[in-house]
Image (cartoon, rainbow, N blue to C red; front, side, top):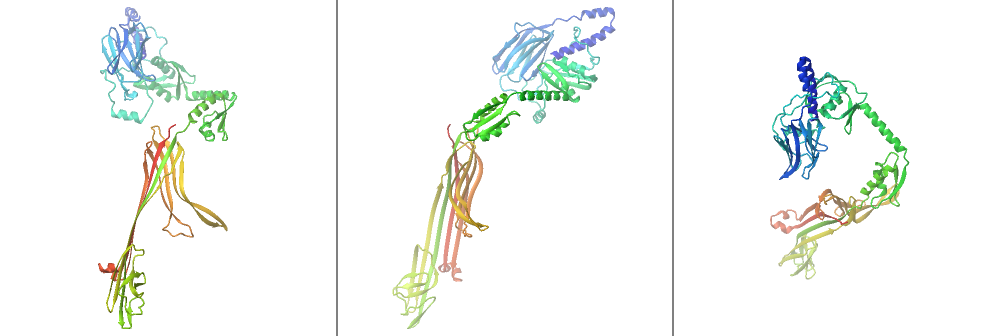
Length: 634
């Protein structure tokens, strides 16, 4: 790599100068003989790409032992292999690939005696490097990309024994602080290659997920600097990165730092922050200046762009909308106009009038193409089911008694005595609730009148003797009822538009305020409000409000104003197209029992039932809401 070659140059110059000063003349002559560039001991003669099973392999063949170092970069993703003391002996510098994830393989010599092979990838995937003397094979997994964050991937390297070699005179003089003790480039640990698919420690994964920090991809370096001029430090960055470095005249100061195996771009970032500096990269040119300088330049560029924009004449265009409302689009479009632009709506023709510089008109047209589209429609089919069940049972008794006191009259309990003095031998009916009526029209007064109010069946028992008459009647009533009220509100609405359906009665209420009589209306209706939203998966998200309001006949009206019985539900639910959902259900059960009886006698077990009037009423009401959305085609 370039950083590695630069390290050789620095080390050679430093050690070579010290050695020349200490050697005798004969030794210096011998040393000068070694200053000529040494011929590379290995060469790369061929590169080919193959695919086997789930792996894509790049095979690099050559002569001599290929010593390499790898680094993986992103933006775009690629794998770089640098070969020291190696020359290229290939017929072409680019080898295309048809196998995923390798796009192509490029070769070059960035420095004399150094060869570089760059494998361009479609995406970063795990890889394995296998070296066999003069041959080298890089294997990639052709499946999904590695899950380990790029910031924690370890470069796969082969142990390389560094050797000091003699080089030509450097292109620029080195500062005095660059000594072999202070500067060293990090060497990869001598570990066997491992597949990239191995998971990092759990702590590393959690840290990476919790703090998405900037990723550094530069080659690791180790430096120990004290009170070094910033300009000399940036010259070192030029040697390491290969970038052209331009310093603003305002860049001044010194730097003191100790780095051990830190990416060079991270070290540069640290130095810039410590000195209030920032950087701009334009191609392969790195410009370094103070933050105030770059901010001032950005303000100047913005002012220049504004001045140029102000110098351009505005144009006025009209756009007729087909589906969207023009007045609702004004607020949205104003956010995308230039400071000189404005937009107006003509509701009568549903037209937008846009005035702005010509460069803004295409942006507005693109927005209108995206927003002025036909909305899908949804049919809402609702069912409101109100079922009721009633049961009533009534059981009552009537009792009459009469006895004579002498031959000319009689004594009766509870009523008038007939003129004959005796009751008729046959009793036809009981005229409730007054007396027992006989054939001849005379009556036996009732002692109890607890009969059923509207009996549907009855049983009569009577007996009489020469001196008395007794009549007893048992009446019963039982009724059952089942009712079902079904309402089917239905309608069609556009996506994200509310549908309202209501049916019922408006109750007028007269009010007097300040001697002014007015009439207000209260709604006793069944009302359905639905707002559908079609999702990308084809389902429907419903915002539903259902209300059923009726007059409550069981509550006495106050000043003629009735009480209202309301049942409602409000919910938001996700449902499939054409599916039915039960929005809500209300069940009301009521039971009323009424007993009228003769005091004391009604409390006697068994016999007391003859002196009672019992009424039982049972009722059940159930209200259910069913909603079915259907997305209409087109």
